[in-house]
Amino acid sequence: TQAPPQSGRSSHLQSSPLFEPEKNDDETSNDFQGFNPFTPGAKMPTKGGFGILSDNERKQPPPSTPGGQISPRQMKMKEITTELLMCISDDESVSELLLSHEEFLLDQLNNVDAVLEPDSVLTPDMTRSQRFQRYGEVMQERIDGAR
Image 1 (tube, rainbow, N blue to C red):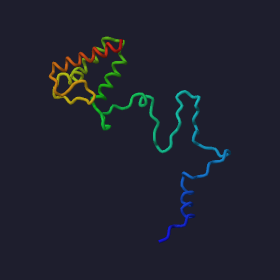
Image 2: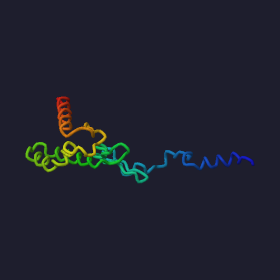
Image 3: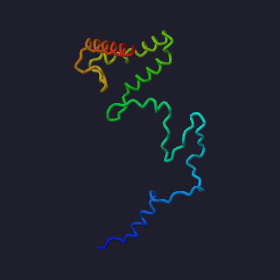
Image 4: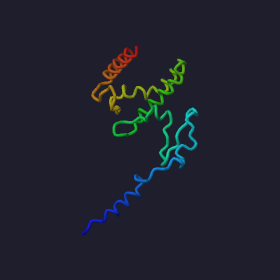
C-alpha cells in the first residue's frame, strides 16, 4: 500500500474553509449590513440561527440548579421578587403580594419534608423551630451586611 501523493492532500486542505484565500479590500462583506453602531440598542445580526440574548437574559440568567436543571422554586421566587420591586413604594401592594404568596414563601420553613434547594441555608435534618431560628439569623446577617 502506498501513501496518497502529497498533492492530493494539499488540494483537500486548500479547499477547506480554513484555507480560503482572504478577500481583497475591494470586495465588500455583508457581515455588517443593516448595523449602525450609533443607533441606541443596535445589535449585530448573527449567522447560523443563534439569536442574540436580550438585555434581560444577559443580566439575569435563567434560574438553574447544578446539572443545568431548571428550578421551579427559583423561577417563582424571581417572579415574586420582580413583582415586589415593581410595587416597593406602595406598602399596601407589598403586603397584598406577600400574603397572596404566603403558603409558597413559608413552605420550606413550615414543611420539614419540603425539598430544599442546593444553596439553601436550611438542612433536611432541621425541625420547624430550628428552620425559623436559622432563617432569622441569616436574615439578620444580611441586614447587617447591607448597612
